[in-house]
Image 1 (cartoon, rainbow, N blue to C red):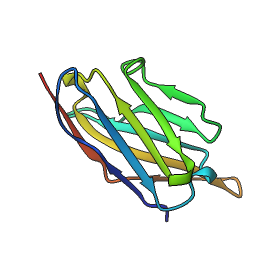
Image 2 (image 1 turned 90 degrees about the horizontal axis):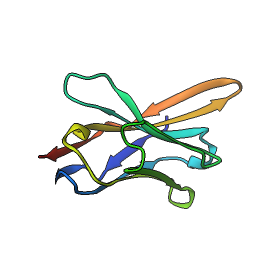
Image 3 (image 1 turned 45 degrees about the vertical axis):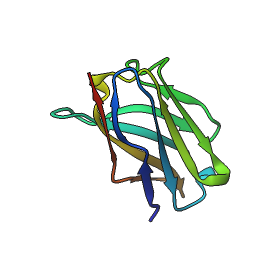
Length: 119
């Protein structure tokens, strides 16, 4: 079972920045894609950003131009750089990984890290 451990969350004022990290227990090069999701108070979990093994990225419209996802295969880590943070970015942020073995798709989730943006 792949383990994902998020870190880097915290309390920040609006306009500030945070960088989230997601460390994987296995070589992330084998993952088809990794992503960051978030779940705000009273909201459903939503995709924030994803990155494939070919480093193709995808972002939610609400974070385009402010957040950047990247990966360091040597460190088995995926990052989410968050700039110009807004109070509506407040949520628990979860790391996700997907991979395929013998045509079966597997997924793993981290336990989440809290991001709170004060106005």
